[in-house]
Image (cartoon, rainbow, N blue to C red; front, side):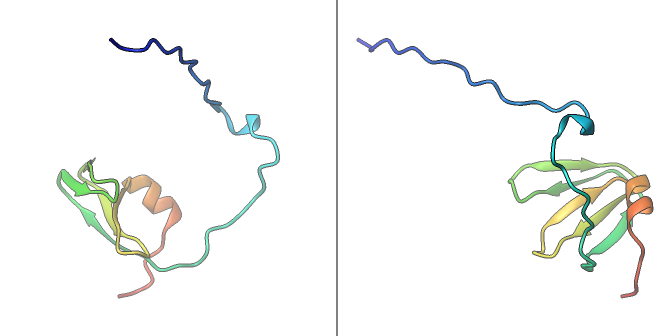
Length: 86
């Protein structure tokens, strides 16, 4: 037979808005060069976590500082990145 055990579910803190987070300070990304290419068709990327993420036409395929691949939404890329050369 199986021993009966009782478990209590832990409640995870959930944030809905930035204003709910006390003590959060301003910071800026370091000026680290990453590589990117706009992809004009749907595509998939195998992530570090071992699963696939789906990109849509107009998203950017990016390679991070550790060689990892990830997807950046086109409008977000346009707001946050500038091309600096090859």
